[in-house]
Image (cartoon, rainbow, N blue to C red; front, top):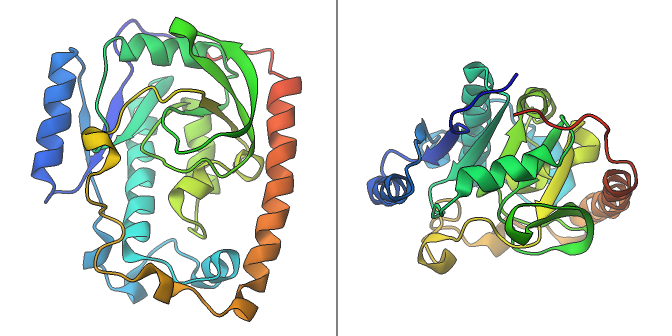
Length: 262
């Protein structure tokens, strides 16, 4: 499937975050881009016992702490955005959180990035850190695409993905047992090839200093379990680190023959 229009862009936005929506909407208008707003799930308004598609026991074992209400809302919001993209029938799309700023040639950059990757791919357009970056391709305006052997990279503020990858993610990401940015990068578990770019394609509004909608009125340290109870989480992370190295190696050494068609 191919099309000549703009790649669909889905923006996750809380109903109460009117200023954020107005800011990213103005950014889109300045660059002649069309956005589709996805109403974010506010985890703080849902009782913990009413959380759906959430494995409380597995989350605790894998993270050594209690989940934040904001983390739950973030996770479900991204799943809703992926569902909206799949329902559109488009071959590829972009999912953004509302604290990024759009740039010139954004659509062309994303198309070039995806066109260099396999059909079943996801590429993070924003990251906080890159460890053990293994370059797969040089694309638009010097952008380098590759896989990271060490991580997690952090952030799910912006990513592009193919339809086949989205369909797999909708199945693999349920139930929730990790924060969304961590779960998204687990290509070895999701059946999706996960890539990164060396330089963030999009800047964050206010230099990334916007107030968080995830950690609200919570002492993060109080959520952590005692050290002896976190042993399963430590073991899980060791296994994840090894799997990440293998996944990055596969992406680097064995690039798929069938490239994404946009």
